[in-house]
Amino acid sequence: MASACDRPPPTAAYVHVPFCVHRCGYCNFTLVAGRDDLVSPYLQAIERELQRLDRPYPVKTLFFGGGTPTRLTPEQLAQLFQIVLAWHPLAADGEFSIEANPADLCEEKLAVCRQFGVNRVSLGVQSFDDRKLAFLERDHRAEQIASAYKLVRASVRSVALDLMFGVPEESETIWQRDLEQALALEPDHLSTYGLTLERGTRFWSRWQHGQFAALDEEIQRRMYLAAHDCLSAAGFNHYEVSNFARPGHRCRHNETYWLANEYFAVGPGAARYVNGRRETNHRSPFTYLKRVLNDESPVAEVEILSPESAARERLVLGLRRLEGVRRSSFAAQSGFEMDELVGPALQRFVELGLLIDKQDLIRLTRKGLLVSDAMWADFL
Image (cartoon, rainbow, N blue to C red; front, side):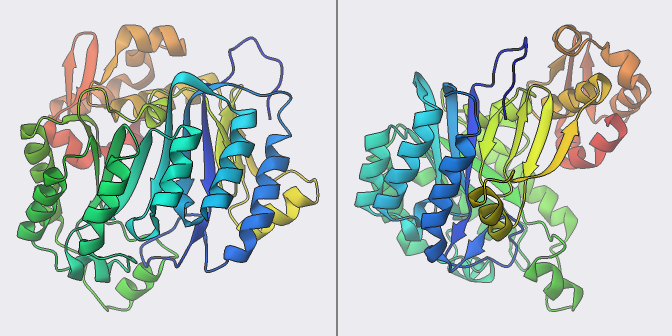
């Protein structure tokens, strides 16, 4: 996975844990539901995959995502941490994140997290409204959130909450109440995501068969702006399109992606970016396990970006951050002048009021935040 190269190795690593009690109707992530019997071979496979490295690589950020990492038992979680930290020891001031669901948490699991140095937990709350949670097919209810949060708050330095808006039949009042109840817990970080209907999910099929109607786009836009206004007023910094943080609590691992820096990754469906080479593992957990345990490569896709493609991607990822991108630093890092690369599209978006051009600095406007995903194709 790593080879001799003049550039320094990545200082971030991602571990994909694909286990869930069930698959929510909107979910298109790489996971396997109701197959806890596969955890033991999964742990063996993670160790085998990491052994493909030529040596241990220390990191500054370590992120365990899923799936639901906290679906593992305390003993399994400890084994996973031990395996990964042997190959990716964490810097003394490093960020060690793990995603968690309220229904899976207990003191024993959080004790393991403390023991191995986890200092940031991202809690998949999604909503405080039971009807909304039921529609989303979540396995927790509002009454479980406070107790789960209390356990996490006592265990780690930084607590993040994920919220979802734009659910069919959701009102702006329900969304405002979700924001207020989240703030009442006093988290350090909040992520707000609009529900997307992705092909291949149960929600996509139900929507195609007219079983529910998607929420009006104008209402979704107002919900997004409500989150921006509410959380900004509460002292959160809106630092990326979907992410808000109190000072000192940004997700440093995710900033690795948005700054187009390289990173290690292991597990089914995991994508790594090392030495200018992007590799993506097989999305099927079954195929992943079979290949790795047979000492075969888990890689399904390989992409080597040209310098121009890498520069364009760096620009798009950087513009997701509300701080924007500076022409001078972009040129120094990519080797391309921004105006030579995307000048006409850049000028058009400025004229449309979607971007602000302040000589050296380019960044999204409030209007641009609402349609940013539709803009990037013009830059790529």
